[in-house]
Length: 364
Image (tube, rainbow, N blue to C red; front, top):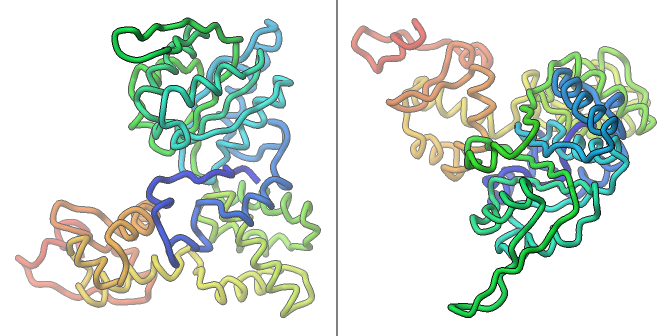
């Protein structure tokens, strides 16, 4: 329920085939976007999780309403699927203002941004997803628009070019990014409120799943919700996608009620294991453990062994494996942790002193 409906990662946009269609992928496809629109919370009270962000944002919006002013510009950062688009819509709803949605890749020229800004109404919320991917000329125009509510439109070319100042009505820019470090400091400093969105705890995801199940008219038990939450990789978008697939399984092969056993059986069919790893994740770990003895091994070599592109392994599979403590990136290459051996039920090999160095890293 708390997730974004636009494509979040530049890397994911380049992916094709199985890697782009992962059940545990955090990028929303057409089906996700349609369902999310129905499940999306409408105000901060409905929004589950991100307690600190909600409390801080509530203060910002309440103060702006009390002053009768537009809210400060807001920057939301965090991984895909955590609720950045949802929060932007809630900001507009709380302020009683319309919202316009666009993205950084769609703004390749300053004129594109000028056309959008010049048509904004007073108090309107402009949601700019993947703001770090906006073109540099448009970015520089945005500085003045955010600070002074004014843009200079260049008419003509060469020595005869003229800058015409265009006054803008006060508006609120909500920027969203999955890579806050790529934002230039002058742009980042112009946001009055910045929030980083964290991954969800299983208990929070259970609340997300129960709420979504109610809206989808799906009967689910407490243990069934917990089973799905534990495999959702801390991401509400993934939790809702898994819920829909488990619902399908329960309707076809059971009595329609989602229990722990039904959820586990359904996700086994879809190759999502107890920790949320899918075929690609396990393929990377199995190659690392079985073919290379746990590493270290170079990324390109590992990708060839898995049969995937280097970028797919590095940008799609590795982040979650590293976050779960199953894989480590070292100067010598990728190394499996003891938790990876345990998860796959394998016994790490005994190495003599002066081996490949894994003993020094993990005490194996």
